[in-house]
Picture 1 (tube, rainbow, N blue to C red):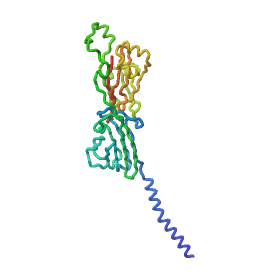
Picture 2 (cartoon, rainbow, N blue to C red):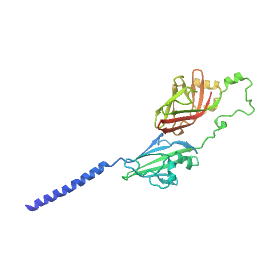
Picture 3 (cartoon, helix red, strand yellow):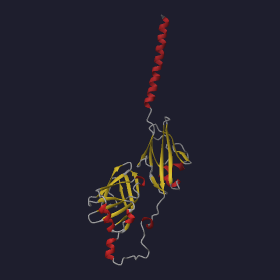
Picture 4 (cartoon, rainbow, N blue to C red):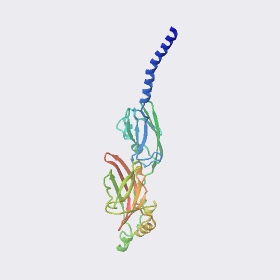
Length: 307
């Protein structure tokens, strides 16, 4: 009778020893924090963003690692760096960083400086981003960027130049002035919820309707009830008189608003008309840029217009 009791006692002792171990394992398992994440800011990684060769554009990825970053590798062709542990400080400004990011839980990489400094030819480039946290959890993403050749900002490239033999002033100023259109540069910019700088000329304002791709919706301001018509890219060069613009607008669909995607120069090449009660404008956006700040997102549109 003694032996069975001793056996039960031994089993009970082992059970008492195992319970704390199991509870400890369960606590450790339950306390494991989420894996690192990599998300784009201001653009969609499923669609290859485009940038101009030699220009600095914001291409931001946010890295979140609740357990702290152990390693953060960035690879592009033969270039490779661990932004978490590298002792070489020259790498960090290429990604908008002041220092290495070891043990950080939330950092933002800006690939714009790297593209502007390291990429010397047009084409598609791929960045491999691999982040590992202090719990040995790893996340990997690939950022693809299309680098386009930069257009020469000359009148000959923007629109056909008049023959050199054409007089500077028309022989019949009244008739010619009524028909021809003047071409000039424009710049529209809005910081956060502020007013659209430069919008008074065209009677427009806008609001942001998509914070990821930074889609803005243009509409008339409180003074003008402007209407908008989206036109083909070639329309800016082919329409050179008020009569041609009027004919084009007669067959075009005009709306009370116009949406433009502005992140990573997406609005470049957009051609549209702004129609007011007594004036019409033809615009072509050559560049669009977005910048994040404490005041909100700054959206800038630059290009040329005809009036």
